Image (cartoon, rainbow, N blue to C red; front, side, top):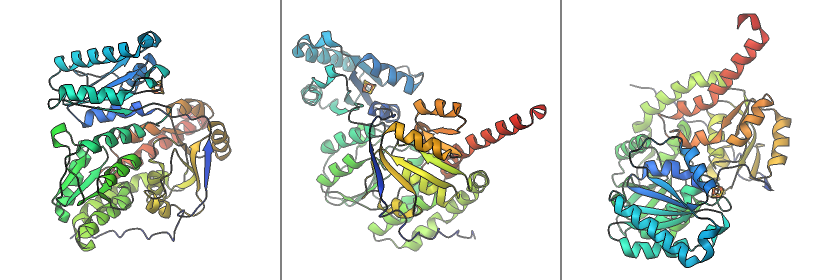
Length: 434
Ligand code: SF4
């Protein structure tokens, strides 16, 4: 029989009531359009039509890399000042583009019109356009809209805006159901579905679903569990439909995943012993897999710029399960209610910052000279040139990191750059050996 590795003891109340440095100034973070890169893979019959400028088209293409699809599932309708000589013309043009797209592509079942920040686009009423086009194309295609504008959203908020716009059109059901909210890679979703079923929760659905016709039905007996920490608007919209949020930390690392499953089980009246029994072998495997990265990471200092809103759960995992020391943990937004458990698990005295004033934060980062700095692509190269080791925040969103099986992969994202930096340092110190 496998020995059960006990959970870590809880900190008293960690950073639950710690002060947070609030900053407002220039930000260095991708806009919400970036979310299309993972959302179009998740919802397999959706199409994302960005209504934007050439800049938006370039961002999407470069963030997505070279797309090797016979039929792509996102595009940009480029608007410029000339198109808005008359708004009526711009609406006609949008209708023409959508008609042509949907005629050519019978596989599309949900079309998202995604707003952006150029002034030409802001003048266009995309909500009304979506209603008009939905009326034309339903029941074959539903047309929805949300904003991925850099003025309103950082990159993970694009997912929040997308899921929030789906909530009002989800079917109604009074059946008791557990709804897991947040786009997860299919492999992770399958692992969670298996574990939840083994624990004894049979009625589980996921938002977003992989296909438009599978989108979950919700109602007063829906209890939802956030899988991602950046879904404040989606959570509010679900609560507006009568669903109840299950308070839990996020399923990052062994400890977070176990507590997340415990919270689900408790909400459905299932004893904690059942969760411990079902998860014992996966937990033990994950803890053992983390040993290798722990050798590299323990005692190393880490600094987080605010990018993905995943910073708090990841910082908690790195310090509690891998022994890293937190210098500053920045987050674009801090939702105290959703983050209550995460805050309590962070070591007392951790410097927390919300929002960004990039110059001030760069000063603090340079003063700290942590062993590894988590930041956006735009800051990584200059900081590397200054001799700092960095990790791109966007990788944390593009890589499967949730759950037991992925805990070691997540730790490896931080261990690899540190090992590489150590090798380079070694080569510089002894050039003959290189
Ligand atoms: S939405 Fe705004 S920030 Fe995003 S790519 Fe377009 S212009 Fe740039």
